Image (cartoon, rainbow, N blue to C red):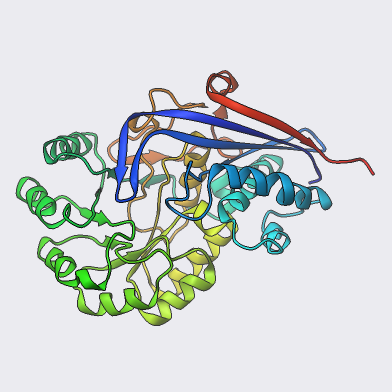
Length: 371
């Protein structure tokens, strides 16, 4: 595939309700759509998942745009792509900027699957025809939290995740367990704690949680190993795992018992597959994390979650969980806690350009020079 055109579209999407974590509250979500077109007119779609500010990683939607425009798109135009896996090495000239790399690589994966007349999940080696999913609930008054859990369970979601932070943790989990004693429940700290909080974190052992996600610093592996040795509850690493090498070190140090794989955080589908395979080899459970994606990013995550070692429910809720209307057709829907995998070629969803245009902030077209 020789790509001759890349189109970047910056959208702003309004969330149905504010989403609060330990690092802030979001009312709107920026989305960077990446469209690639090859020499035969085959289109592929990817999505940049960085936020307005560098809350989650160092990347923002503006840095993603800059890295794509100044470095990654020119690298894509340099030579044909015979398989998307090649881009991992081609993009390795650029340090980090994983979300920017994942956005462009994802679009190439979609085009590759379409060119070869197969669904994206088949191109990745996925086997499942349906994916179990859970729901993530932001920090909010406990009455609202309990109501949202009840609603999610009625909708069939297989697992509940709540965001926590110091002062909003043990008491909240205790209340949830009082009302829902047997629901599969996990908590996500988004790195809000330190080893000084070990007694508070150990107190969560009393509530039969599936896992505690990223309790300590975003770049830490060593202290997580110390903490995991003292907890009964499995630690799941999220922000600490940005590459295959990070996952390998975490497994060797016994820093966690579960790993969350997010396409944007690790630099693309190719690296996500490598981490999946490593965890399968070492029998470390994995699940597919979410980033409040729009429809294209959600479609990529569904495809990834069909790989055989994704054994825990993914954070890929229905489009309607976050948006009044998504920009893909059909929208992602959940039936009894499962998403049925699309059988159409590529990501399996069509981008509704009219809906895209309603939300667009700016766009730009990049053309490969003919020289």
